[in-house]
Image 1 (cartoon, rainbow, N blue to C red):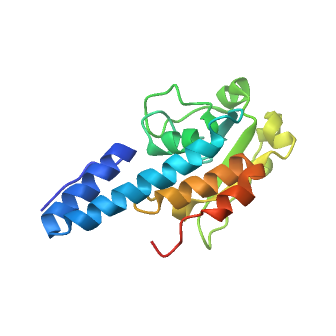
Image 2: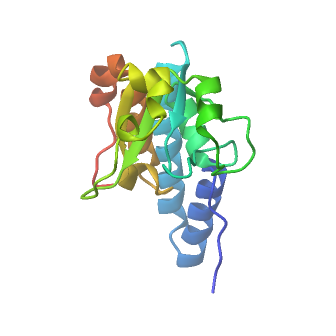
Length: 182
């Protein structure tokens, strides 16, 4: 039995290398880690000079749960050119209040949606229209199935999130988008 802690980019790299060594595939593991680093660096390079967009990541609706600094998703938001409005909270998935979201005034609300699921939109929730980003329709759905699995497709997740945060980069990101087969 092997138990692996897995909630940061560093954990991902370490675990890929560890599993590669244990399974006799160290060179393939090293190639995978190099590819992931390259993909993340590419996205970070494109977003580095752009203004940081403050985002609220709507992990759960009732009670409101988001992402904090303890989550790889917070790191992914940074790579993609965003600034997590609750990035100062150490927990990976802190419960917050509607009032706290209003005070932090995100420029964009990201709503992860799972394939085949139906989820209410923040605009449909009672009281949420007081958040300017919601009232002004600055809400983007993102693919939960891709973003909520910290694994070898994290580069593809960074591209998808960067497009949601900075849609003006869509053309540049599509030129070197990681293939879905990986």
